[in-house]
Image (tube, rainbow, N blue to C red; front, side, top):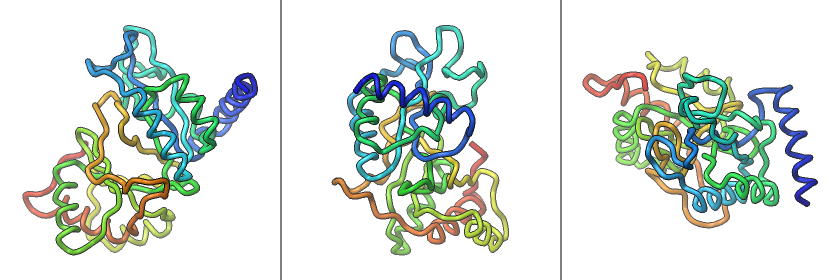
Length: 247
């Protein structure tokens, strides 16, 4: 079995090189550190592997990223010494190799149990997301809840929050944004072909956590439509005294 999985992994790695940037969930590279830590923080191990297995049970394809780079290469194992998002993006194998097959997921995280988990948004059963700076996002979430909107899971990094939503098309998103008077540059969208780090990953920016946790169980969490989220996000970023800089 190990030999078969190894051959499949090499094949998927080759395919990801031919078709970069496509596919479902990926675990990002963990920041460099020969002692198994990054930026002074211990890596999550068993909890990360368990989370990856749980996402796979929901039908969200996953895979671990590359191993940490050598000492002195910076915080990411990718070739870029000035990587702007260390440990928070796919590298090798690429997104095309992602899978929710339990055997592959178990083997991958058995080899690299602390690899950050990235979901390839909008692929298969995977969600999309709307992301904005943390301060404005907290206001948007509060406004949505006051208005009676049912929210799905909300993910937080040290600087940004991401509200998970049902998959949407680029055409549908374009119509929504066209209807807005202004769309701040700090508002980001994670749709098909994108990715997002999920808890309990640790990246170069710090630990990823849940602001609103998914309901426990083997069923994929409920998600709101993107229409319910975009307006509140734009308002939170454009209302006087509320806007936040790009982050």
